[in-house]
Image (cartoon, rainbow, N blue to C red):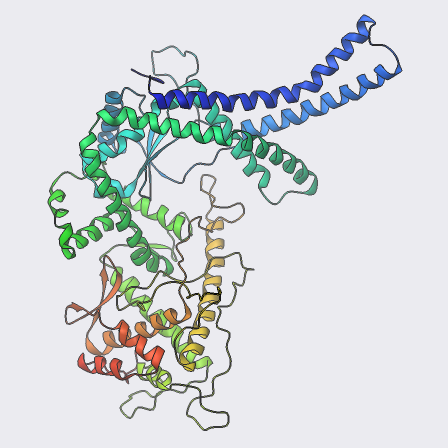
Length: 623
């Protein structure tokens, strides 16, 4: 059985598709209505029935109106037909690079009795779908096979888009079970009515995007506004029908796929949730710090496997995960999984952080073995350098500890001494530090006019490299921001750090835009009109000023531990950057740092430093 079949969902989808096409027919009827009236008036004049000065004026008015309406309808139709529908950024997978994967997909399509997808692509996300790329702007039409006559034009099957984490975490059988309902959707998609309705809706959506593009002169802007108004009007008329049509297609695909690996699909859906959780944690805790340093991990999909394997080691409820690792992974269906993983990792960096499409000196790949040295250690030292620059701007004097070998060097003791004071001294009182000035708590806006995203980092965790808090300011019952706990010195220092980080991020964002624009090729994906460096899905959860200060103080502690106590930076697959002291992860530093910031009490942190032999009076190496 092929085509629309007898599924109730497919029949409902076809009826909704006809409703969408009726909206198109009504729009065409409205466009030709003045022309029909003009033909009637002209015919009446030729037969001698509609004569007189009034009828002559009516013929001229209706004739001019008909010409204008037909020209407007032709212009709108031309824009709708030629506008390029939006496509998802993906990594194409040619058949020669994954013959086993194509063979599995075609075998699954044969079992479902539906047309096989025309191609396969990967996306750096935990999802899979079918995407129609049959528009002429997306490439040349598919040619008939050699020896076969060129018959009537049939709809080109959609492209199968697979989430790249699925290929690395799932086994071959699990991937086949997950893809079964997705591939089954090619059956309803091949029906002419559904295909025509989808083309019409995608054309209207693309026309709205074309009409909304900036940078046009006033005459063209007015014409585009009219085209956009008509396209939006038609979209509102068929939105409900199009939504119900897609629901019917999904129901039909699910009904058809029930006979294929139904029991295994239930187990595979659990792995989908695990892959999503591991992928989200890997992006926010591991990949994002590297992207900020101008490095992009080149094996993100392999990192998902490592993260979920680490989860199975820590969580007793996940003991069954390791047993399935002995089965054949779905990435074995690729000829060169490493190259595909690298391409998907670069696309993920561009989607979630921005940057050029090709590696360069300031945008280089990094493997997991070099991650602790090139990302973790460098991040700590960059944060420590920023902290000391802000202390210099506040006029904080270097530490006067008697054992300091370099009194003017950047030391952890300088930070501890500054934050140890609980409040600002009274006006006119003598104090070794300069009295703090009133500093705005909120970060400075980006220098490019507020169009950029916030430079805040990922949510804090219990790791030593994070502050241990949660993202976002607390809100009271009246909706106003609650005051963060901390001394006067810590609040002022946190505000200065937030402003400094905002300025640095604004400069880095402008640099990324310039680099992306310079390297933009004719086939490159543009995320936003006129803004090739802006990511469409930035991973920038908000951090409070207190959390930023805690992260910087923690980075300073880690630098001192590495330089004076033989500690080493490391990568934790679940929590990101971490510190190893004596071969074990230091996981109890965050509460002591928060005590220093919130209460001005350095005692617990000094005891912790003494216990591990860390010398705060010795200068550390900065970048």
